[in-house]
Image (cartoon, rainbow, N blue to C red; front, side):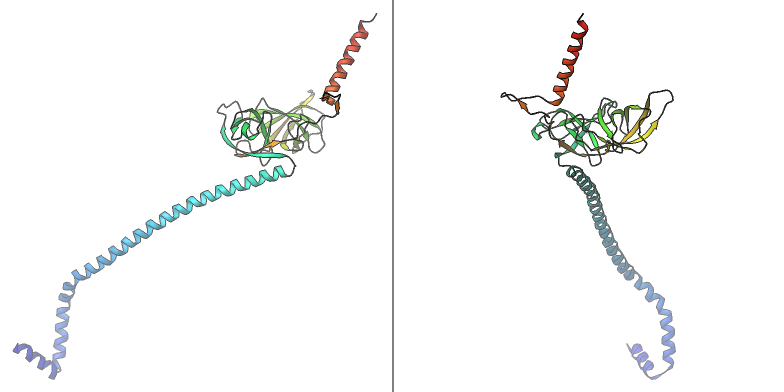
Length: 294
């Protein structure tokens, strides 16, 4: 106690004590640093651990938000594509004043040699055998069988499917038949001298009274003239996205109209086609009768 009092008195009244105090501080500083290390380490560890926990929690939240936004973006892209396709479908139908109903793909035929599909509209919706089906870009095919809630559709590319068409540029009429491949159809019985070229647009002719006139079918991709052969080999590419479309329009074209009025009071109507057939039969019978005469 006396020593401490003496040192305090000397520090207050003698300047040499400042030098001694500085030297003693230099000697004691490492000891002070070593003594403070545990508490400093504890404080640093606490702060670092809490910051790490906060960063990990923030990273987890950001990952969850990213996955949620990514799922929404993917769904939005799908909805936008579907909306655009439906708009094109509506535009394709509204350009021609024909009743229609929308349909969606259910399944595709598993047979590699058959291009057919099933859609979600059936007899309950008014579907019928022979009903034309289109997508946003062209003719897809026609209904071959109908159940209560679904319909089976043969596609334009099926090898057993044929469709009357006309060349949009000059009105020439031919038959398009499938080849069994989605991307190719062939134009049948084209005379070697016919005016048909690569790039020509082929549309429905309406002659079979099943597909309405003027719907795009295919575009000519190749015209091959084989010397010495009476017919050219013509191939075309279907305009409908047969292997990609999911939404379709099933058309309700007006029924074929009788070209002659009803005869008699029993409501019997004779069409021009039936009348022409009757005339041809009568002419044939008359010719045969003339040949039998002496």
